[in-house]
Amino acid sequence: MRRMHGARAGRTRGIVGVAAVAGTLVVGLSGCGTAPWDQPGFNTASAGPTKSATPTPTAPATITPVVNELASGSTQHQLTAGDISLTVDYYSTLSMDQWTAGANKPITFTLKGTLGTDDGQSIYLSRVSVTPAVNGPTGNLPAPAAITDQSTQPQGYYIKAPYSYTQTFILPALDPAATSITLDFTYEILQQTAPGSTDYAKQTAADTLTIAIAPS
Image (cartoon, rainbow, N blue to C red):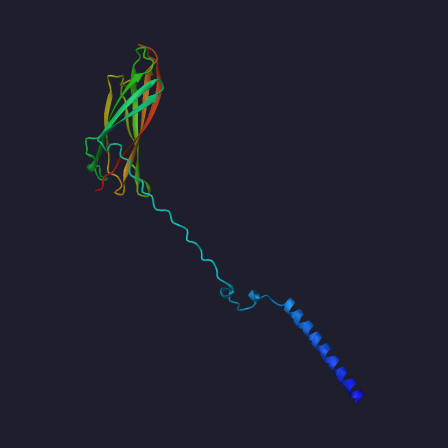
């Protein structure tokens, strides 16, 4: 009987030893196992709530008004070319509501000058040119050719106040999508170096005029 008890005790210790080893293996497998989020088929939505993306606000579209310097019928610009001060009056005999893309559009301008240091010298306009640029809803459009008036006089047109130079240029039909036209003026001036002298100093003045095109 005592021997049987010893054998049973030995078997009991063996079972305990196996259980201890098994427990060690379980712990080892738990420590070295694959993380749940790396397991195939793991649903990340079940891992916890996710933050939704905040929509980025869209800036409202801006509308650029069309500039029309002849909206009141006329405008006056003051220019400087060296010691010469120039006054230019712009207007049109065609009303602004008739300045459509398909119409022939007259632009009239009057130019006169004064000297800062006036010892009696004369002032002449030797050449004037205007280069049109046509604007549409999405940018530039084809534009008419430049218009030029070259004086046939040796010095040019006398423009010292109270005398003046007046000219009318006709702008032809434009692209139907035109919304405005910008006119770049270049005035080439000859200033007498001294009263009675045949020597002249050349000065140049530039100006810009923007006019809206009326809907057809």
